[in-house]
Length: 457
Image 1 (cartoon, rainbow, N blue to C red):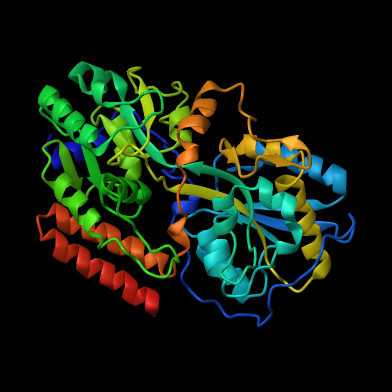
Image 2 (image 1 turned 90 degrees about the vertical axis):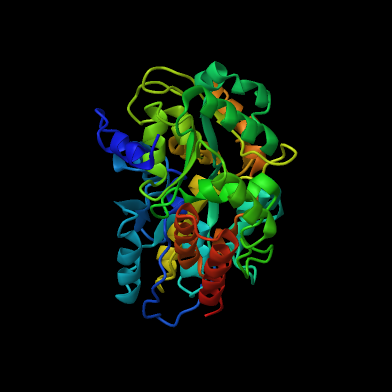
């Protein structure tokens, strides 16, 4: 299939699909503006008894099932009944949410609480001194229960915890298993642990293309939407990296990444498509135009089109299976989503203490189970105050399977590297150049240098 044919299929689809944003909220573009600082530093405090403040405001980015007041109203009402603290909720949109928060900070009217990911709460607003350090809320028991990668991502380089982890996921791939079986490509899959090797991936694409004579998968690069999928594919194929371990520099000029790009560009059936973002790719997967999607996670597995058509199915009922990204030995390293709560330091200790009660209630008590279930993601901790959170989706076979074969492969959360928004732009611009046939090594060198120059600045 020609690239323009892919686009036409996406635009002319009879069904108007409303897809969950691929990768969840935390992989949207974080704010990079620098609002006027109040000059205050994060406060050190301990939770106060209930009643120190009677009303707080929480701003929520749409994360999983935390997308509307209707969804979370029962939880909030129970919190108010238990604590006497009223919570005013406001939902932010990723299109302009960062601007709203920055404007509020400048006007000294920031919310008391905010829900999102470390690239905003830690690497941006926390690093600029606007957030409260929550490390006093996390003791040794908490540290043994909270997912280590999540807690590390929520902690600044100087040890301050600006985000209390709430729930997590790992991004992966989705494949049309029926199409794989029809082409004999299922022989390259390990469906016991949902892994495959890079060699198996290459052979599977060859088999699928030989069967249909058309595009099998798209390296979408219209913009940043769903870019965690293309990063993970290219990094995993030959063991490349995106940043260094210290999160101080971008390293996607790794020879292993260049090798992966060269391999993908050479493969019939793989299209570098500058007209598609992750959400467009998902539509084409759902419509059975593409046989695999790189922009996949548990939200898509539960309902590929958010249209109530059934879990793990295409529009015509073909089976979609989640897969880890291919790697040389079948041992993948997945990109993750980490969401949680942060508290703005607005200079009102009573409000800070009341906000801490909210954090404690939904992140470190029996109510953490309800908060995670609403999200349709996984709890960021194994237990909380004696409540087991490790298997809260035991009654859901898809969640249980995903928890067993996908989530354990969660890797480093490098999205907290300085200059993240600029690096994402450089990444998809680089992919566009590769798609146009420009020299791969030169394109990679140019754009990683741009990302590091902005990072150093």
